[in-house]
Structures are given as structure tokens and as C-alpha cells.
Image (cartoon, rainbow, N blue to C red):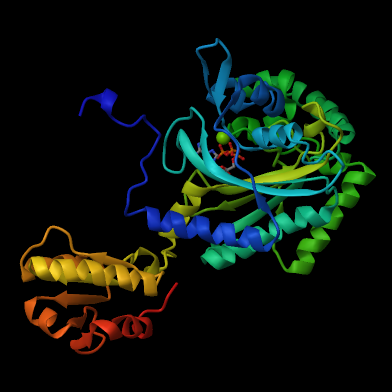
Length: 429
Ligand code: ATP
Ligand code: MG
């Protein structure tokens, strides 16, 4: 196929054999979030470029080099969203969802776009599920975000493979004092810093902390620590969060170098990381962003949220073999019919069954075919049972009911009794 007719590098089709796992994952998360009282919001995939520049920060990897930005036909600069928080805050402000200071607990799901180097667990179109909470400024809600992800890892069977890393970036005042101390320290070691870090020292010094460069990392061992610069407000908040995690029995490690890639974080930042996926080990990341709403033109409004990477979590489920077997079976019953008269009767009967058993997953053979070929298709469909209707059965108004996975003998069942019989055989999801 010519290159221009292929998918764009780093943008993946999710094929039919993979979608059951995606739907299982997304369904599990959606149910969990419903149960915790979060409401779903859906934002457009494209926004004005300015929105991301303003919220994410000009001196971040995303805005500097990862955005898909283009001019539309009116000459407006638009960008495919690289993350969800900016658009969510925009929507909240635009529709006055937090206007009276009322709390909002929101979540979203969808594709995000970043022009990065594609590799395992890193793509140019990827998917996130994100949560954002507004107007709740205590450590209790930070703890809830972490507690509910911990529950999710439990439901998915991946709890043992993920580790929580935690840090506090303090209020903007304490972060300001820390930044000064860090700049002073790093400036004294300028010759040992990599080029990126030297540049960041001038533009966004905290980002030097998450450098991947080994020599710069060695310098950082003796660098001042944010923890020593936290003011009382930040310290009390952080202690409150840790006390809640302890009470909930959730293990964590404090990582003083955890600063997160985006500019807008304050106080709590956290990441769930795994060592099972190689370099792309962060599966969920977030933190508090109390200044962001005001920075975007709203009233002072506290905010806290996170986003999880669906591709990485799907990879983790596969790697740990935590894919429930039943999710890939999409057919309960396969209906084989032989001859025109039987086909007509099978159609009518199937529709009646669907009326009577609305959750029945029934596949009717299409394209006719010999006994052998229909049976092969029935087996391949993964169905538990086959229904067989030929001229003989039709004459007696019965169907042959044949278990395909070794659950008992074939038997004849009257048309009228079929729904009741299926109801006893098939556990309805
Ligand atoms: P990383 O350090 O891996 O680049 P990030 O800090 O840029 O991650 P966030 O902006 O915090 O990531 O996004 C939250 C989550 O979304 C990440 O923890 C990850 O699971 C997922 N994610 C981010 N970028 C990608 C990508 N390019 N491909 C797949 N998943 C991604
Ligand atoms: Mg990134």
C-alpha cells in the first residue's frame, strides 16, 4: 500500500480482536467513577492553540515540541489537544460550572495528540481517562483520587505491579523560594549540566529535576530539596494526604524529584509507575493545580486531577496476563439454518428470541452454506451453543440445541420453549 494510504506513524488502529479488552477497561473505569460520584464531560478534540500555551506553559516539552498545530481556513491557529485539563478548565469556565464556588467532580475519556518519538507505550495519538476536581482544596480529595485509582488497580488485578510516587511542590510562594535556591545551586555547577538543563535553568528551573541525563542527575544528588522549603500551608496539606493514605493502607514512596512535565501543578503531585513496561513506566499521573483556573481568567478556584494512559494500562494487563477470559467471547448462541424455508423460520424465531431475551448475544448464520461450513463458523464464533434448523426440525416446529463446549448432549426443543431454555443456560451479563 502506498505510504499516503497508510495510518500516520504513531497513530494506531485498535483492531476488533483488541476492542473487547479496551471496552472491558473503559467499562470498569466508568463504573468505578460513577460509583464515586464523578460526572463525565466531553470536550472537543481541537481547541485554540492559545489555550494550551497559556495553561500548559510555553516552556514545556508539550508546547515547545509536541503539539499538532495548524491554521484552519479562517487563519485561526488550532491545536489537536495534547491533554485534557486545559480544555476541561475552559469548558468549566465557559459554562460557569464552578461559578458559585460549588465543587465539581468531573471525568473525561478520549484521544490526545503529541508529536513524540513513537515506541512501545508512547504514541502520537494515545488515549487518556482523566479526572478533574474543582473547588475542593483539602488533602481529603487528593487522597480520594489516589484511593480510587488504588481500587481500580485492584479490580484490574495489577495492584502488585504499580507503585505510587508522591511529592509536594508547595504553594507558589514556597516554590518561588525553592526555585531561587535551586538556581543558585545549579548555577555553581553549570559546566556539569547538559544543554537542555542549562537552557531550562533560565526558563523553567524545576524541570531540571526530571532530567534523564546521568551527569546532571549526579549533580542533583546534593541539590536543595523542595521538602525543606515547604511553607506551613503546604506542609500541613502534604501531611494530611500522607495520613489519609496511611489510614487507607496505600503504600507510597516520596520522590523529591517528581516535578511533572506541566507548569500548572502546585502542592500534591503523584505518579503511578510500573517496572513492567520498560521506559514508558508511568501509567497514571496528576496533581493539584490551584492557580490554573485564575491563570486562565476565572475566579481563584482550586483544582486537582490526574490522567491515566489507556494504552499503557492495556499493555500492562496483557503483560501480566490479567485479561479476563470471558471478555473475548461475544456470542452466546449461533443459529444455523439449512434451506430457504428454514432460513425464513430462523429469522422470525431469532427476532422473537431477541424480544424475549434482550441481552442474548445471538448470531444468525449469513451466507447459507453446508452443514460442515456452518458448523465451522459456529465453532469459530466462540458461541457456547448452536441452534440447528433444517427441514426435519421445521416440520416438527423444534430446533436442535447443541452445546459446543462440552456442556451436555444435543436435544430437540420446541420453538415455544426455546427462550425459557436459553434463559436457564446462559448467564446474562
Ligand atoms: P511521559 O513522561 O511518559 O512523557 P507525561 O508526563 O508527558 O508522560 P502526562 O502528560 O502526565 O504524561 O499524561 C498522563 C499519562 O498519559 C501518562 O502517565 C501516560 O500514561 C500517558 N501518556 C502520556 N503521553 C503518552 C504517549 N505519547 N503515548 C501513550 N501514553 C501517553
Ligand atoms: Mg511526555
